Length: 439
Image 1 (cartoon, helix red, strand yellow):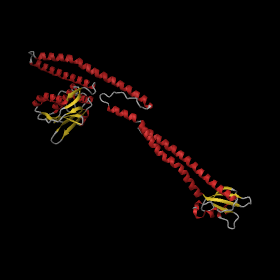
Image 2: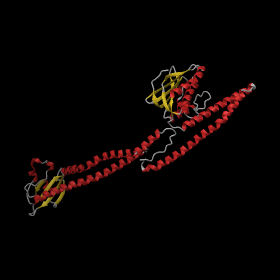
Image 3: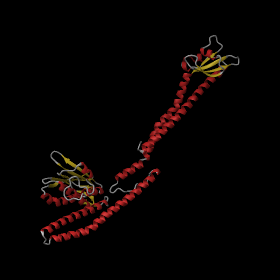
Image 4: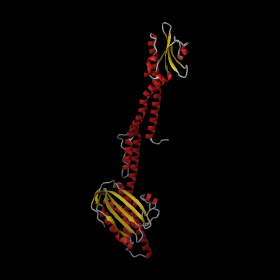
């Protein structure tokens, strides 16, 4: 069954138009055909009226100027050599008759004069039918030509009638952030308004639920920040007290757990903050943000013997929240450092092109499987080959921040004979660009 409402509507209207055109054409053809036959009978009657008072032979008078099949014959009964038509009509009463005396069919008007002499006026039915058919077809052809034009107009009307629906779908696809904006009722067909109102009410409920969840996560993270900070201080104080070696190991484990918990809370707060922000913000020098974060990781990568540096760096200005941008870049670089083995390499490129800022972070780690790439930005998903003590929120924050600023994030696995790794490509709208500076 056809699933397209537009297609079903067009198919239904097309079928109805064809059926109506067929019925109308049939009745019109038959009516025009009968009218043409009646007109030709009237001609025979008029010629018979002329011959009623004059003994004439219109066949002889016509000469060569009229085709044989179009000629009207006038035959007299009282002649020495009667024609085949006269012989066939001797016993018939006056009036119009259709006879077949030989290999042709004739329409004959038989009349009797006042002096009792009889005559006939005849014409072949083949010619009469040909004229009637041509006349009837001329009445049907305009209707037949109108049907395709009518179908084109119907298709255009249906297309333009559904344009508000298509425009609404396009607007919904273009929504950024959470995407719970209500559907506009403007220019919508009245038949779709109840459906649109139902969708809007559903969107309102979903938006309310999501906002409630966001507030819960943010509030819970805020509430947990203070006690976690207090625990961290107490654990730090314990480490400064002389204790047995076993107690020291347990305190170190406690401090590491507190550190991971604090990291999780900070990421939850960052994620909640990015989800509640859609575009706009301060003017940020993205290249400065990237340089500062790379500087923070220089010592870490040096200890791991990882070559961290810039392949290309350009001054690029973007609009956004500096804290969120810093979290986005830090999570991408932290992920690259975590998965790059010793003696590996991490190349960072930042440049401007076509009004957009492009940030590429390429590492020489194992890369990602197709499944990992598909699920990389899901919260708490750590992939099929997790490393370190991450929470699985880093790439979720990266995507959420980029999306909130009107950008995109792509992951591409590098798998060649001489290199493996992962390239993360972030594209953000830029405000201005400057000349390129190679690092």
